[in-house]
Image (tube, rainbow, N blue to C red):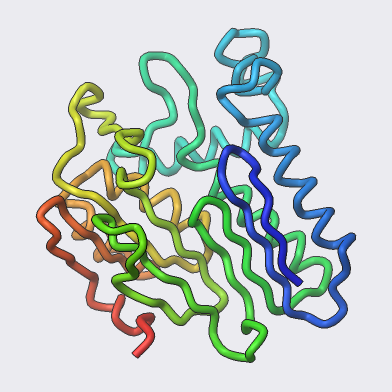
Length: 247
C-alpha cells in the first residue's frame, strides 16, 4: 500500500508492503507528519519554531520534541566542527535536521506497529526496512543534478537511511556557518547513506556546507557512505559507497 501527500511543502511518500497494512495505518503516519509541520515549520505563525524566534517561549520552556531537536542540533554542530548550525543571526531554523528526524520517528512508529517492510520518503530523504513489493531490496535513484530527469546511480538498500543535500532543486538554501554570506558554488549535491535517515540527513547537510572537504569528512565516519557531485560534474564517492550501488 502506497500513498503520497504534500506536507511541509514537499512530497511525502509512505509505502508499506506488509500484507496486514490498512488505510488507517497510513493515515496515522501522515497525521504525524502534519503535526510535525505545524510544530516545526519556520513559515507558520503559530508554530513552536516561530514562537521561539519571537521569544514567546524559550529553550527551557519549549516542548520535549523541541528540546530533543535542540540537543541533536548542538550535538551535530560539535561533531561537524561547526559546519552545522540551526542558528543564523539569532534566527532559529531547524529545517536541516527536522526532516530526517521526522522520517526516522515515523519509521519507529511503523516498527512499533510490527511492520517489517516499508519505505518512508520526505523530499528525497528516505528510510527503508526489509524488502519492496517484489521481494527485492529497495531501489533508490540519485538524480543527476544537471538533468533532473536522469538518474546517475541506483542504490539497492535495506534497513538504512539515505539523504541528499544540494542546490539543484531549491537553490541556495544551505550556508556555511563559518562564512554565512558566502554562496556555496563548488558542490551541487552530496548523498549520504547511514544506519538511519537521521544520521544520513544531519551529516549530508554539514558535508555540503564543507564543499569539497565534505566527502573527505564523510569518509572518515565508519558508519556512513557518501557520493558527491561538484559544479564541474565530477563525482567522488567514499570507498564503501559502491557496495550499495545496484550492479
